[in-house]
Length: 437
Image (cartoon, rainbow, N blue to C red; front, side):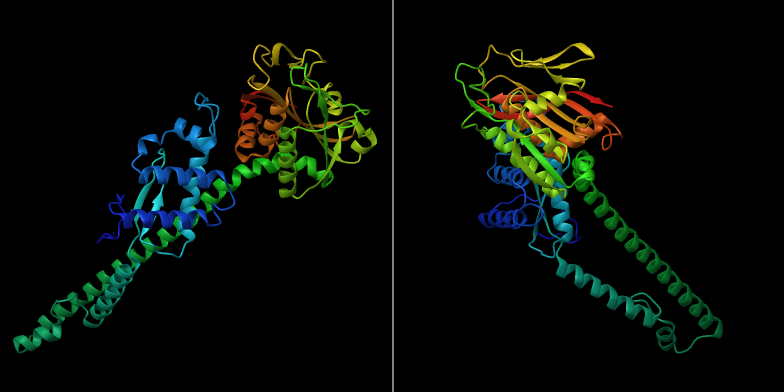
């Protein structure tokens, strides 16, 4: 599969052994540190490689991948939900990093070209041949230096021997020619050295920018949580509780202090896990409490994350003074106090498990608690889960930072999210409004 000139062109596997070699290479990639700690990136790479090997590359389109790999509905909006494009970009970067750091030479390299979801299989450069060519070049180069001429070219001594002697003028002319040859070869060696240095610098800076491309989105997550963790590393996660109420739209109502057995839904449990994970990754510790049993004095001793909207009394109370907040029950909507036309409400003509949800993501310095407060609250439980996923995701945090501007990491911020809901499952969020002050 190597090419005589050392270049790598796309290669089409023909035999069973070819396919098996690609599958083995795929396995090595997926178990590498660049992929093994993620679910999304290995899933995409495995899907596109396996479908290409099976001759189904026609399936490798953004919508099909979104449905098959990321469980998106067939009608999902590819403009607002960029999960496929974002993940493909990350896979492309991680493949480049993997091969730049790998010492293996398996004969095959898997690549994902820019602007495509169809992988290419490239023949690795034959390192032994490359070393052989390099050794041959060095040997020939040394021989040439000793002879002061190119391979096969007559030296002044051999010319004199064959001619039986030469005049001093001839000898001087040949000596000048030999000197010119040496200088020419030295110049070529200088050019070659300059090219090698340039290639090394390009490789170094490429690695720097690739790494920066991976780290930069994570910086957006860190920027969001930085003020929350700046004052105190211990963060209180305060969540609402509910009890069953079948005649209510959501099937539950808010649990009060007198509720014997309050509970949280799977969506809120997922939100707790997401927030605990992101805070621990950024150097914080967490404590979990229930909203009905949490006094104000407890809130004043910590930075606070409030999960849930209408089932969380503290989220409702502390948001009430903000521009974007929830309306009192039974309306259950999100409004913008400075824009009377802005109101976000669930469609009650659809079932609870089918109606799109809306959520508030807020981070502000609160006068009541004299500390930083983060509110992640949906009109329903799907919105709360999506809000937690949103502030844990480098991709979505980068989108929010782009909308918020340079003051993203220091100023107060509120955002409204629209969240698709299909069969009770939480879909991808999209930003519909942002306010920074």
